[in-house]
Image (cartoon, rainbow, N blue to C red):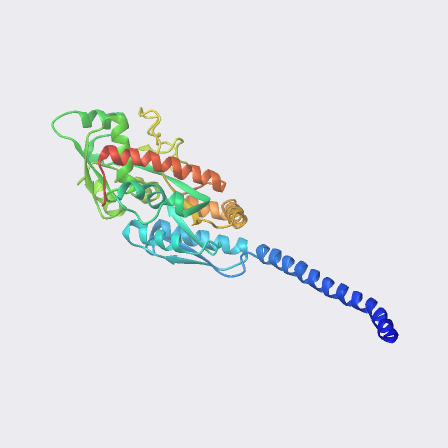
Length: 341
């Protein structure tokens, strides 16, 4: 009995040492696990990022997507792959992005049509921009220019409005298609100026511009980059720019607001969205990378060549833009009774 008690007493310090070792090991494991979690979060991105472009290969939007992807890859030190998902006015691409994991490895390049217009054009839409997406950053905006041809004899916005009000019939205007930016911008212009003009939709901007130049239609709103060659060749006459300030590409062309339609302003724009629920720190990382890309002189030069003015914003500012643009074009669409289904 005595011997047993002595042995037990002697073994007590050993047990305490063993317990301390176990506790130390457990605590070390917790610390290492926490550190590993922090390191994992800080490692974003640790594999390729997918940039969805909800349009077909070719054209301004696709070119911009590839330019942005290249710039982001350089800033983030990770591959950024452009995946084109065209169809249904951008809806297919938006659906794919909305269903993607909210982990920062899928983002989508959007324009005003898919982000702020579709919700007013379709009675049922499978996505809601403000519910299903998180704003990341704006990328840039581009003005439209009001064009006509020599056959009309029109040389100013005022002369255009006066002539359109005179009998016997309204002028015709071309657009790149129903509910496109060129169509909606003209409807906004008609509403604010009192212009009377009949819509002639085309399948794309190029066809619309060609027919205005040829005199088959009288006027159109078109993206600046697409019409500069026709303007320089004398086949088209620019009457006004839609943005608040004049374009550096056509500095002698007044704005629509300068020309008598007070307060008129409209432009096309681009931005990046991520699926709703994407962590704020990842969104911020992406936003900072976009800002660095847009501040690069060579990127700015390339964008200017495309007719796009770089536009830097915070995620919150981009969210506010989407909200205000959605309301603006909803009012135009309802007033003009435009619908796509």
